[in-house]
Image (cartoon, rainbow, N blue to C red; front, side, top):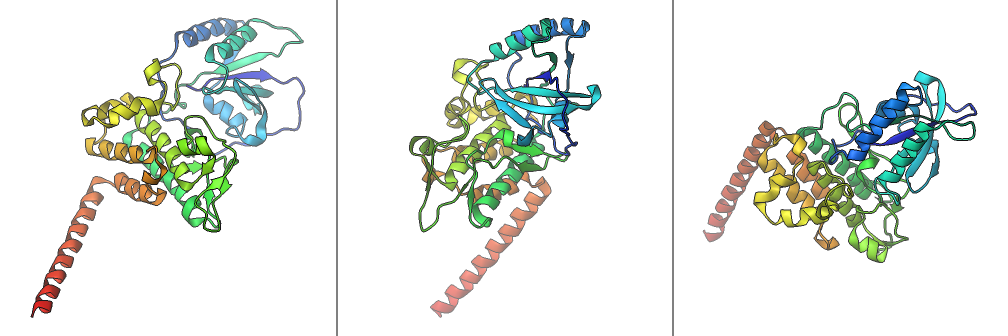
Length: 358
């Protein structure tokens, strides 16, 4: 669930916002809606009828802030980030506060602030003009299995370019779901490379750097030693891929204690094939090929292994996901072609053996 509050800025400026063609879509509803969220909505709805606040859609706030462009960022605190924007429908410069679900301050404090400001008005108090609590992007259904694999495959290709094509090579360092932007056709675009580092040079295998990134996505060896490698990005990719498959956040404090950390929750399920379906997002409604799910989980499990050396290269991940994303007919054609090649090679090998023995 995305949670935002909008505050009016008293002084108008020349700040302008152009409409962005990108929308930051989520991977579906995350977890259960907490009771105090519903209570907050009911209370604010009452104040809305008194013209104290209104409900904004996620799309409106995304347009207002250029899809939460870092250039629109005006502050950051325990609750999350604050962006400056312009909402055309009300002709108003606003400050948009976005709740960071992984931040130091909890949901209740954020909701308490929104609730309090929705009930008071004074010239020396910031005025709450509205809020947004969208579970899904407007008019969108939860992503189906094909779209999820397409997103994962495209994101992996983006990492592959940074690792293997860019010169010098680049390590992303902060690969996470919120840094993947999607267009209307679900083509992913990696964004926010502010923490990216140039890869090791001079025969070195890692880059030593201050530990930065987002909790839950950082590879264990990087967290412990500050030694950053391309395999660190592979771990982060595995976490995101598991989020895509399961529809869960990597850290979700609204869930039962044993389910709050996605990696810890999934670890025992990876060991029991009969539990694989329990990892899949319930919003998929079981509409996915079982074999495809098993293969996807195998890829994710390899990427999030504790030991960096046991993780695959991102190029291998791309190859596996490209196959996974193929339509069934293409997969059959690929298998048939591969079998034919193997048959030809075995025949050639047999002929050569006969000639050697002659």
